[in-house]
Length: 317
Length: 126
Picture 1 (cartoon, rainbow over the protein chains, first blue to last red):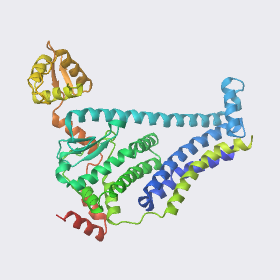
Picture 2: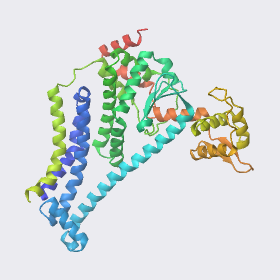
Picture 3: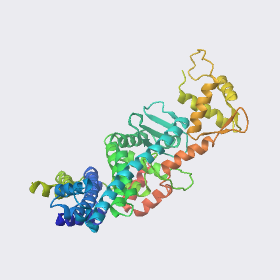
Picture 4: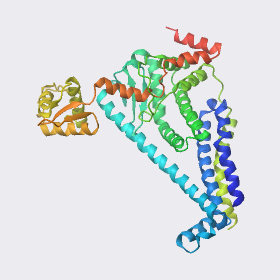
């Protein structure tokens, strides 16, 4: 149990700093966006699990040789069958920290969900008054504004894609189709759920390098995934032109940054540059064998802290 | 049959056209003067003031309409103009990328000569 806690702590530190830094610098994720996305999710989950697990195991050391025995001992203390003195101050502190961190993560996830939902509701209310349905496309709203803008507003069966007048005058019909295919992919692949989870992860642990790097990587990867789906139906030059025109279009807006969440679909300049680079200087997709390797690695990464927590208990009967 | 959403929209359109506060009665009269959108020639049922009041209180809850309580009956006005609300929406969408116009300039600065040439060719194709 003692060694388990140190192994988990080592894993937590590795997943909090060197591993995500290396992954964020790697070039291959753009050539295997799906595998990279799975890896980032596994990294975040395994990181959280080992962080909490390390503190939990360390806290339970005086109470039992494995997780099950330790938790049983803890229950005895709560039921008054055992004295709290068995635990000691340091271990009680570790247990409290594990409980607090778990509660903090769950609470932030929940809070982020409500914040995003509130912003989305407000956005939807305003859209209902300010936009009109597109004549020729289902689930598409047109808003009267000269800035070229396209985004999607997720909401189950009420999901819509919003286009601006400016975009429709700027782009040719084929380029517009590319943009719509891109936005619809965000909706069908449920990218807003990924953005939600990683936004919550970041606001829960803003000082952790992994949460910042993961959020940036994930928002860039979903754009790449959506571009790839659009590329199945439109030519590469059409998509590149559409992205470039939208990025360079007139956006006469005050330069105030707002927290995204209402629209949930935000391109940063860095992301746009990365998308264009990838399309203009194409690199072949990562070999299937390597992609499978990445996916296996992601599974292993998640299995490692789980096994460290559970296996000693199983072996010990 | 107009839905509550359609009515909200019609009420907001009227309030945006009339910057000075107006009463629910006056709004009802303006609403019934409007040509009905469906154009099927059917005589629509006159709108009740209570319906207008319901719509107004819904809009008030959404923070789009404010009420002057100093006079009786209460007068209503839009909180901000239509353009301000549109700007609010656009800000939310574009907000995190305030230097959007600089994207391409920055991009051109970081790409290789080949990439830049491809991009120029694509954009100058018309």
